[in-house]
Length: 143
Image (tube, rainbow, N blue to C red; front, side, top):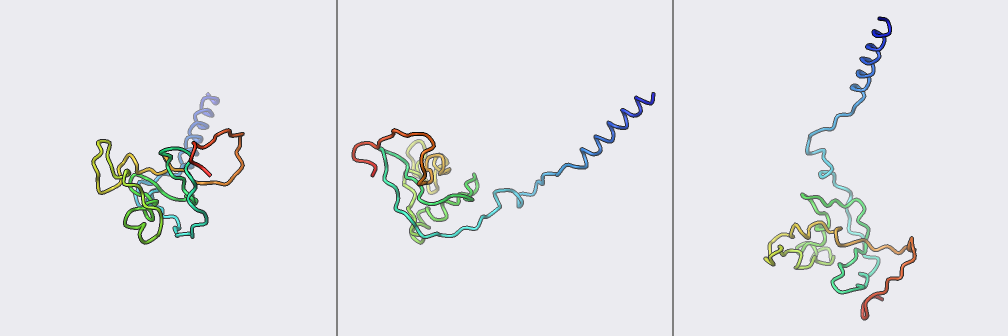
């Protein structure tokens, strides 16, 4: 009997300790990650846009994108690269193909297929390769 009582008390105490130690996740949309605006500034362009290595290669990004938010509701890349803002910032304007849907119709906003920039574009980094690389650009491309 004593053993059973001790077991029940231990179980109740453990359950109580676990339930009181949890952090609740809020459901306030104003506190969601999409509403967090990192410090954004227009750093001077330090390097030229890198040369392409093959036909239809997406251009590389010549700056850091650390802290940029690209979500379904917000794309910080467009703060500089949209047609309207690129005139002011001097950034490369996104290609007209980014406004076409899968049927070739041109829309006023970036197509959902092309909205998430980092699916195709990567940041440029001048680092030593982790593994040996034998890649050679196509004739007429690259440096």
